[in-house]
Amino acid sequence: MGLQPWTPWGCLDGANVRVGNGLRRPYASVSAQALLALSIDVMGLFAGGLVSLLAPLFRSRPWLLALYPPILTVRGDISGIFSGNLSTMLHLGLIYPRLRRNTETYYSLISSIYVLTLLDTLGMSLIAFLLNLPLGIASMRHLGLYLLLPTVTCLSAVLISIPLTTLMAISGYRRGLDPDIILYPCLSSINDLLVSGSYAAVAILSTSHLGVGTLSALFISALISAAVIIYMRRGDELFTSVIREGTLTVLLSTLLASLNGIVLSGLREGILRHPGILILYPSLLSTLGDIGSIIGSLTTTSLALGYVRDLKGILDEGLRRTLRVEAVAAPLHLLFALIVYLLLGMPNLGVLGFLVSVSLLTNLLSFLSISLLALLLAHITHRRGLNPDNVVIPAITSASDTTATLTLLPALAITRLIGL
Image (cartoon, rainbow, N blue to C red; front, side):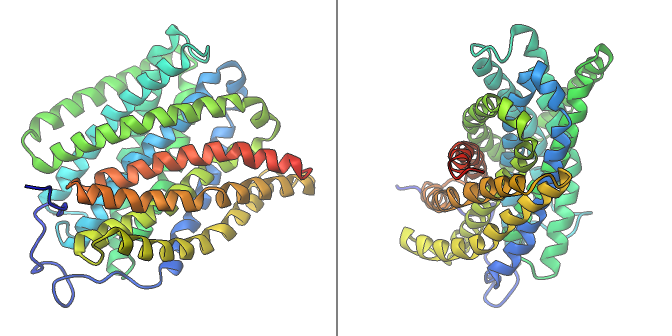
């Protein structure tokens, strides 16, 4: 007997799902909602500004710079799992559009996200350490810091972002906005700011013995909390599935993320010469991930509700959506460059040309490949009976982070070639 396409948790027969025949048609105006969603990526510039304050530490502690991309990737992966499940469950009536007195499904979801964040951050820390150790970026004395910094950073951000994301999803849903379009971009931008601010604070704490002691206490508390949640949720099907599928997906993506960190650490001298690159960096990652997540999330919901059924239908619908989203994303990259130029205190116009070129080239070289990957992953996971919300967006955010980081190299080369 072949695998059956995935149906969301206890998918209802339509009685509790709003609109006409028990199904909720996709929302109109993808471009308008994409503009709203992607505009929030401006927050990533302020996230980059926070991390740029650590520039003096990067010279003496290059491992701090190497850890930043994988931390952002884990943030994106976990956010993708949460927002993907939340938006689909809102569509299907499995979660009520309210924060208090919600369904058991909602509480199971947020419990799994907390535990998944802890497990995957620890895994990411070990993978990043093992990759950086032979390259001389890290040494054995840094192992404890590799475990402490990412874990405390990511858990701090998640504890704040979960209620904020839920409130945004509920508010947008009640106003007729599609959570598949707005939710992940909003969440990723908020988390970029939260993660970057938290990482800056945690990195500064790590430079003193008292700070390391504080981080250690927070780390132990997080381990105990996770153990209690795992014990209480044992046997919960949704909790178990999110942990099982999400952990593997995120850990595999961590390999790519750690390579991003090595690449970024290799660009350290260039970043120190052009601090605008580091300020741009979170927004470049977030926007590309948001493009892929919008396409992927819309497709997983369409598959779950039966609006598309085969690869041809997925590609036809998905590519049209991709062009609508890109029509919004490309001009926003020009805006990102202008804002960074203003944040730098408006140096000479050559700097503005440099930032515009890097920002726009990174987008143009990457948006189509990440959209096609999102569509193919949605099709494959659906056919194999997996929950696409636990696989597609995490895989897309990791791939987009790697793509955006690697695309910086040709973007910088082309920029130098044209004399900027």
